[in-house]
Image (cartoon, rainbow over all chains, first blue to last red; front, side):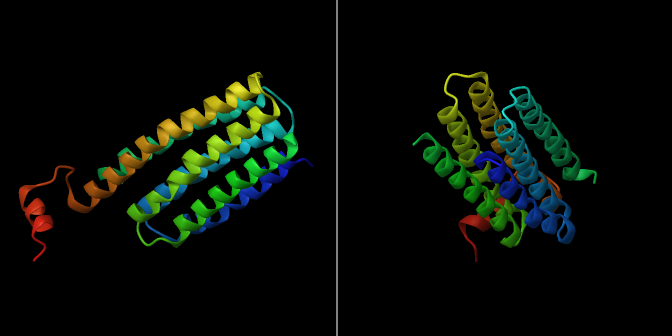
Length: 83
Length: 109
């Protein structure tokens, strides 16, 4: 296990407080937690790609960063009025 | 030497992200929580991209890491604005600020 994989594992521990926010607070707080969680998972994918020395895995992080933006933006638009 | 620099950059990046998560957990409302998404979306990707570049300069991995960091850094302010807008519209039913609201801000009595 190298430094990249250790960093990815510790980084994923940051999802626990965000999960607590998702369970215990309102819809908008949950959206904020979701935005941060998607950033953290994207960065964890980046670290895992480097940790396993697989260049194609970096594409996963890139796709995740773009798609999580689209997903969170959709949630934000719906939470304005309709949800 | 290179390993030490990579370890320092990774540690700083992970610490920033974890502090952001703690901030989101500890704040009281959505607008306060939004502030704490910024360090994890600007500093952390930059530090991780720098760590990849230190380990593998001029490689496709380095270019993709920089690209991921750029995408995250550019899109997060847009998301923050959209979320704050959603919070205001949910609370007040509109996005525009009306004149009596401005008067209340200028003269809080």
